[in-house]
Image (cartoon, rainbow, N blue to C red):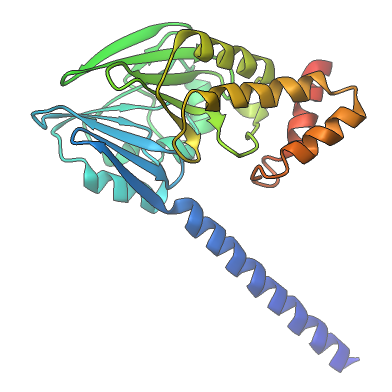
Length: 278
């Protein structure tokens, strides 16, 4: 009996170690940053939580940061920013996109028009933004020679999702409205709306013609990333009552990465079904 118990405990310990290693490797990969220098003024930082950019004026005095990552990745990003005048734009209030805000003392922070309760329910103790863009509203910034459009697309992935468009570079930064080759993450408490998400993607397709798209997570892409995300949602929504079509779509998107239990094909189906019943 003792021998059996000892073997069982050893097997359990081994499995625990293996699981811990796999979790660590996954987390380590998630937190790794890939740096892309687009041009002397624009650096793109993929990974480390949500994707980010740093756009610096030609004279180096002002920097625009879109999303500040989280944890050690946020600290790595902070080291890259040398400008004295810093503007932070948060596409939405999830911790992997706002986790580094506190590292920029005196920065001016802009987001969509969350209520204080909505913001703190998602962002915890991260201070409320200095400025918000009203739903369906737009704010225009000048960072050196670049014209930057901030558009509040409304309720979609969260209560208030902001997108950023660099006019001269024709670059669209979508936050988590676009997950490239990944199943989207849903969160009821954050105001997520599948129908609102589809509507938002319609708006992005209609109002912008980007050469480059930076999703919230995943590699750089082009305008077809927006189209593919919309197709993902629309095709699943339209197949809810068709088991054969759902099975086809499950195979079609089998290469998409999941973040159990927050995302996956079945999670998307469940969420859209629940929203339709509600």
